[in-house]
Length: 137
Ligand code: 5GP
Ligand code: ZN
Picture 1 (cartoon, rainbow, N blue to C red):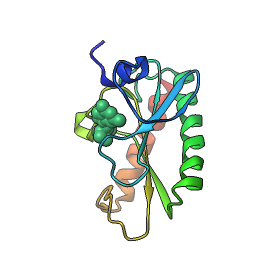
Picture 2: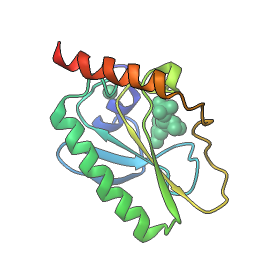
Picture 3: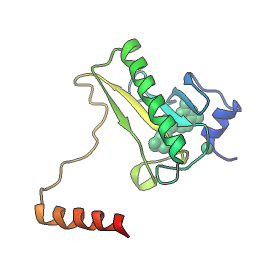
Picture 4: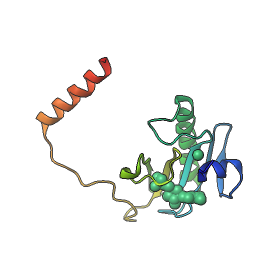
C-alpha cells in the first residue's frame, strides 16, 4: 500500500501518536500550523469524505472530539479549528481521510480559511432547491 498514513498505522514509519483506539489513530502533524496540530485518521484506508465508510467516519469524529478536549486541557489554546480537505483542488495532499485539529491563539494569524463572497438570495434559493430535489431522486 503506497499510502503514508497506512504506513503510520502499520508502524512501518514513525509518528508521534497522541491517541489510539481500535478504529482510529491521532498523531502530531509533521509540519504543524500551530503547537499541537494533530491529525486524526481512521485506521481503515479510505481516500476522502466521499468514500469513508460511516462507521469509520463516526469513529474518527468521536476520536477528534476526544483529542480536541485533550488539546484544550494540555496545550490550552484560545480556540481550535477543524480542517478537513477533500481533493487536491481543496488542498488535500495525503489521500487517506484525515481531520486536522489546529489549536488557535488570539491573533496567531495561523489560518485564513476563505474570503467571504457576495450574498445572492435568488441563487441560494435555486441551489438549495436543487440540493433538496437531488435527495428525492
Ligand atoms: P492535507 O493537505 O492532505 O489535508 O494534509 C496532510 C498533512 O499531513 C499535512 O499537514 C502534512 O504536514 C502532514 N503529513 C504529511 N506526511 C506526514 C508524515 O509522514 N507524518 C506526519 N506526522 N504528518 C505528515
Ligand atoms: Zn491509507
